[in-house]
Amino acid sequence: MLFPSPLSKGSKIGVIAPASVVEPYRIEQGIKLLQEWGFEVVLGEHVFAEYFQFAGTPEQRLSDLQRFINDDSIDAIICARGGYGVIQFIDDIDFTNLIKKPKWIIGYSDVTVLHCALQKIHIASLHAPMLKGIEEISQESRKFLREILLGEKVHYAIVPHHSNRVGKAHGKLIGGNIALLHNQIGTSTDFDTEGKILFLEDVVEPLYNIDRMMRHLDRAGKLKNLAGLMIGDISRIKPETPPFDKNTEQIIWDLVKKYDYPVCFGFPCGHEAQNYPLICGSDAKLEVWENSVFLKFGHL
Image (cartoon, rainbow, N blue to C red; front, side, top):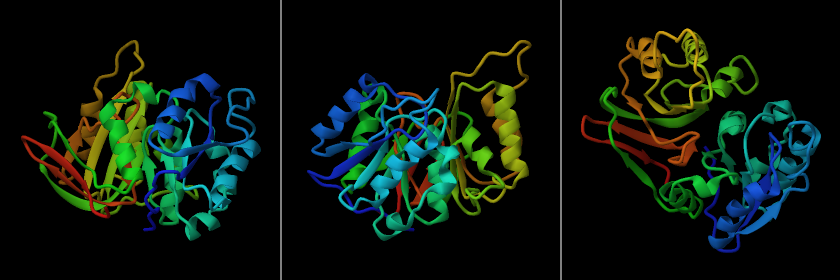
């Protein structure tokens, strides 16, 4: 696995909008935060483009990402926001320069597609807050993002959930948005979960769809031979009438009770204020105990 070099004061971070349209005022605070951290911010040419619901055409969005991949003066790439759209150009990205000079690609939600592509070529990436709404992300989450970018060690300790299954796991960390992960199965950006710690999150889905997507993951063998499972926020569930017969915990437990790896519910990642950065591709150790839960990254 290839890891980017640590950033330092004056490092350049390129900003792209690879999916849905974003208005300038929505990322002002995020840009200001990066500058306060000592980084130079470089906007992609098409960040504020509008093409129906997208931040420009697929070609324009790809152009900004490809430019920053190829530009050796750019040290990291952060997404302005998610939404929908990365999958429209994922197979057209040339990662050659990124293999020569790895740089952090930062984002979550729809950016899960990019994380899957990067796992295929063994480049670590950051499932982490994006610029839109970063001022609403917890100070702790922002602090962890800054520390990882600077190459500092971060370890997480969280309060245990009552539905957890205790145990220890060691393996590479992968995962992301459930809807996007299940959408990659059978494609060029399919992912391998064997012996890995998988993390999952999602937002604004009805429970029946969470059940369907989780069953798809299981039927495809993605839940079978894990080292461990981390469930982040599955939040803002769409109401259904009549109601679904299970909640999210019950849906997941029905599928993983036949396995014996540790399971951690309530990990602080996803679309809410506590969104801890997770290093996709890093060796990680997950310890789930009755009184505590720890996640440690092995490569730092």
